Length: 191
Image (cartoon, rainbow, N blue to C red; front, side, top):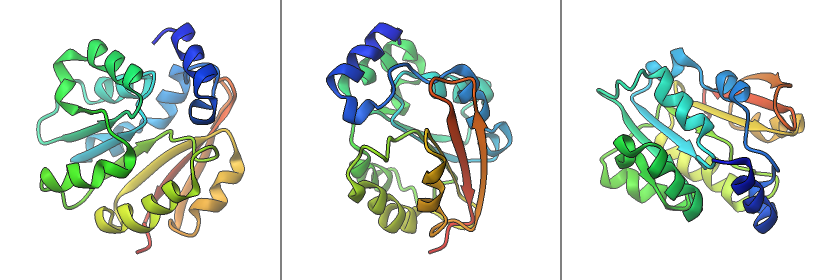
C-alpha cells in the first residue's frame, strides 16, 4: 500500500488507524517468528491493513500452505481490496469482516484451536469491549497453553493489559519503525 493511501486512511479514520505511516519491514521481521509460524496449523492475522505482515507471513512459509489454515482479517474495505490485488493466489485466506465476527467463520470451518494470532489491532483507540471479547471470550474458546498471541503497540505500558491472561510474555522493541513499536509475544493463555 502506498504511503499516501495509508495517510489518507489515517486522516479519515485516525481513531482506528492510529499511525501516519504503514509499519516497517523491520517491524514485520521482528514480529513474524519463523519457528512459531511454521509450527502453527491455524494462523490468524488481525487487521492486515497495509499488508507488510501478511507479506512476511507468506514469505516465511515459503508459500507452502499445506496443512495450514490461514485467516487474514481486514475490516476496512479499501485495505481489503488492496490485499486481494496484492495476493490474488491467496485470496481465499482473506476475510473482509470485523474481528467480532471471526468466531462464526472459524466455527463454519470446524476450527477448534488456534495456534497463532498475529495482531496489530490499535487497542488504545478501539472500544475496550473488543479487547475484553478477545481475551475473555474468543481466546477462551480457541486458545490453549501452547497458542501464541503476538501483538505490537506503540506503548510499552500495553503489557499490563496482557499479564492477566498470559503468564509468558516476551517484550522486544523495534526502533526502526515510525513510531518505534513494542512487540509482545504471549503464550500460556490462562483460561
